[in-house]
Length: 216
Image (cartoon, rainbow, N blue to C red; front, side, top):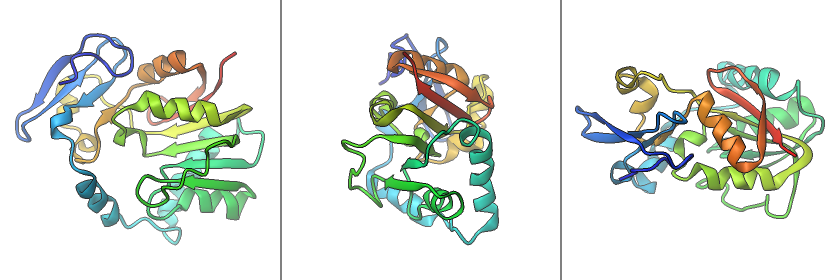
């Protein structure tokens, strides 16, 4: 059970998806929702879901999906050209776009597909985590890595769809129905994460994009 919020330690309350028989722990203080750990699928099951995705650099719609993110949440704020794409997936499309189209040098990391931690001991102008945060059981530990790997003037740009605040809407939400999704956020969740980890938000679209830099 997740009696206390993984983000802000506040008391949570339980909402239950009756059809799936799954509990979710909702923190009204910061808006974070965590799936009951007893219902989290195995790494093998999670990998099967990733492998079923047909995402390719040759798909113009998928490329456009990332370019909208870059144009909104990255390029107005990024001052350099070294990057880390954290959670790059089976095909590192975002890293390829940054290198091929914009002259970046990008390291990649993915738990399943690129598990070598090349980021250790390095620092970057840009760190991206797109459609990754919803898969993380312990978000704060990953944000600590992001901050440690950011250059002083670097930015962290993340993408995850923010959940509806109404609990009944949440239980009907398509994003929650992906069994590999276990953590759900609001813009308020992101602010609290930033406060705890020494990051400040410099951009959010209040829908799915958030961009941070180090707070001093």
